[in-house]
Every structure is written in C-alpha cells, then in structure tokens.
Image (cartoon, rainbow over all chains, first blue to last red; front, side, top):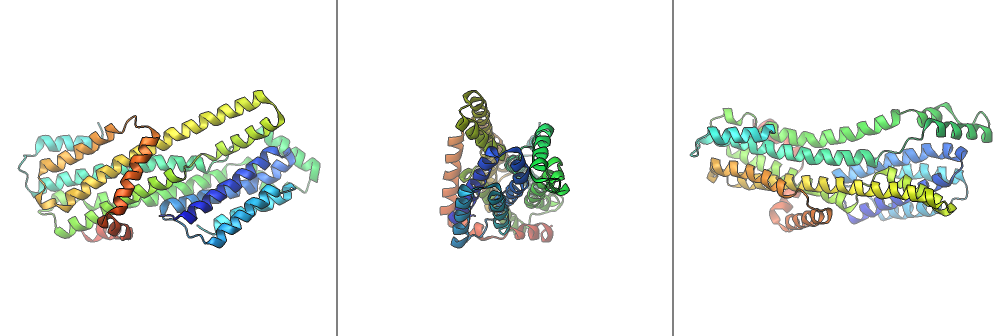
Length: 99
Length: 291
C-alpha cells in the first residue's frame, strides 16, 4: 500500500498538471501548439505513477516531495511559455522515475 | 442468468444434501468462480476509471490548424517539427496509453484467473487435499485484501478524468475575462462531469465491496472446509449474490465509509496482517504445484 508521502507526491503532481492546464488555457494558439506535447507527456507519466500506486505503491523520499513542490512554484511563477514547457518536461521526468 | 448462477442452481438441484467430497469440490469450484467473476467486475470498473484519468481531450482539426498556422507565422517554418505535428494530430500516443492500462490490468487479472484454474481439476479428483485447501485459502485471502487496497487507493485519491481538469482551466480563463454566458456553459460541463465520475467511482466501490464479501466468505469456508456441508457451501455463494443486491442504490458516502470500516477491520486482524505479507507470486505457485 502507498504511504502518506506517496499520496502527497501524487497530489502535488496533479496540482502541477492543473497549473499547466491553466497556462495552456490562457495561452495563444502558437504557444498552445508548443506546450501541448509536454503536457501530454506529463499526463502519461502521471497515469503510470497512479497505476504503480494502485498496484503496489511507489517509493518517494522527502527530497522528491521538496523537488515537486519547487516545480509547482516554478510553474506558478512561469513568465513565458518556454519556462512552462521546461517545467512540464521536468514534471514528466520526475514522475517517470517512479515507474 | 449468469453462468456462475446457472452452475449454482444446477448444483443445488442435482446434488444430494448429504454430499460426498467430489460434490463439495464441485461447489467449491463454483464458489471460487463466483469470487473470480465478482473481482473481475470490480477490476473492469477501475480499468475504465484509469482510461479516463489518462485521456487528454483532442482538439478539433480547425483548432489544430489555427495553432499550427500561428506557430509557423510566429516562429517561422522551422519551428513546428513533423514529429510534434503528428503527435498533436495523430492518435498513436493515446492508443499506446490505453495499451499500457490494458497490460497492467491483464497482469492483475492473471492472479484471479490462476486461482480459478487451480480448482478446475478438483471435481475429477477423489479428495480435496489439505495442502490445496491451505494454498487456495492464502490465495483467496491475498486477492481479497488486494481488492480492498485497490478500492482504498482510488477512494483516497479519486481518479477524476483529466478532461475535467482541462474543462475547469477553460472555465477559469473565460470567467477571468468576464464572459459569464460562456463561463456558465463551461461550468455546467464541469459540474456534469464531476457528477458522472462520482457515480462511476461509487459503482466501483460497490462492486469491490461485493467481491470482498464473497472473498471473505470463501476464505471462511476454506478455513473449515472439512466441516462445511454442501448446502453450507451453496448457501455461502447464494449469500454473495444477495449481498451484492443489497448494495444497489448505496450512495457514494455510505459505500466509502463501508469500505473504510472493512479496511480498518482487516488491518486490525492478526490473520489479515499475515495475509498482507504473503507474496502475490505464491498464487502462481498454488496453481502450478497443487493441481
């Protein structure tokens, strides 16, 4: 079974994805075209992480939680679409490390 | 009438009440198959929830054209790559994602299938070996506990579809612009989507509770198999179906609290704590070495 830390990690990842969807919704057509592939990849990795959590739990550390909290802040503060794309790619990579 | 129910009814009619071991074995196979069937119904419900969790809404062809056109106009012809374009337009990615979910659930279902197949040959045998009962009991208990854990995971962190996240983000953008009419439409879509998800979520919990009840009954029967009568076995299977019927119409909050109560009860029991430590791989051993 997943522990409290794993659950917190997934909730933070979902909040980070929500922030990316907010930026996608607010972006112009050209920026949307650029941002969507990275968001799609992050969504895929989130699905895999949730499947792993469902089956047997994942092993997150306090450092992982700090990293994803920091990433969520980076997304919230992103000043341009390139920063958002980079954050989405980082989110996908972080989630991908747990499956 | 479902095949398992047919088998139970036929057994009830055909077998004498004072049953000998082969008939008890036949009834036990029916009980195991009933547990397998109920578990599969619950797993189907979770698989569908995961499909929606991982699915991003596709933009229409018109919207994609506007985005690609704007990207080229803004950044020049070298900007949108061919691979980005096919990823945006094509459907291979989502197909791969669905396959991932199917593969994961196929792996989960294999254990339930192995349990069912482990008992297939029993009625042809003259006696039910003590080791077989013990091995089967461990497998049933492990899979029952696994179902409780699956339901608990989804109930703690619901799998709201990703499309709902997109819809809510769009609602916020429109509301921030002050377009109340469009915001209302977006919010209605969001509201309906949440209600739709929660109905399916509750149904998955109800199906799990029914499968868990069947599993716990079966576990109890296997614990005292030598003393159980044929009618006792058939009654237990019948009870499983009656119990499932009582869950119809149970609201999401009640289903959730019943699940939590079941989990707390199992977590506090030394027997179920030992079951938690049993490796899933032992089910495959049970199926291959005990036949």
